[in-house]
Amino acid sequence: MTGLTGVWVYLAASPLTWLAVTLVAYATSLKIGAFFKGSPFANNVLISAAIIIPILLISGTSYPTYFEGAQFVHFLLGPATVALSIPLFRNIDAVKRSLVPIAVSLVVGAVVAMASAVGIVYLFGAPAEVIASITPKSVSAPIAMELAKSLGGIPSLAAVLGISTGITGAILVTPLMNALKIKNYAARGFAVGVTSHGIGTARALQVSDVGGAFSGIGMALNGAFTALIVVGLQVLVNA
Image (cartoon, rainbow, N blue to C red; front, side, top):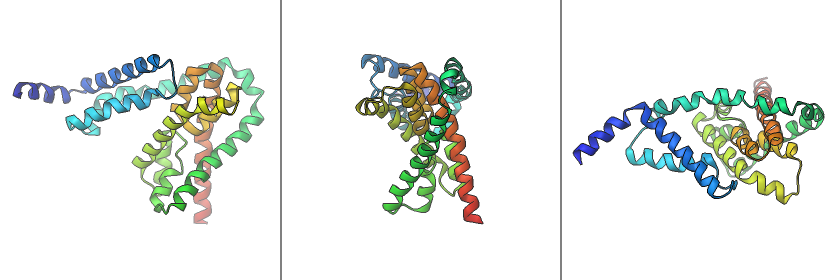
């Protein structure tokens, strides 16, 4: 046992160990998703987290130690986001024809996403820092964390709420849109991009190239528009 413990201590201190754990967890999530034939409930992010978190808890590994090893995956988020321009370029004509619906949907979607979340937690008596943390829940985690911080919220809580929103949206978008009989993949994609940022966009890309393009647009525009709304609210409050 002493020998095994020593080996584990050595491996846990190696950055490559946690990169390997992350990749194996994601590969496993893909296998599970394939087994369930691409079901939205077999979400890659959710399954990967369900594999990695118990390993970290059992091994007593802190998040900074894990992140040191897995940060290469984090680095790839930048190129992956830029790569969303590829389906956008392929469907640029459809985007140009939909500028007015995109603008209207963006405004309504962003405002409703924030107002509904804030209204619900306020009615339940949540403290101010929780309200501030949930306000930017529908934008990607880095943006949500900065916006929550500027509002007096808790950045780490904002990240958790944002990721939870993304996973929920990615799981529900397909069955919900099917139930509502919405067959236009541009509309479906833009809706999930506005409400569920990158995680929802990843799901949209699995279903449709058109849906992925519009989801990427929704994710980017909602991040910028939500930031403008937050800045506007701060100006009004401080005026």
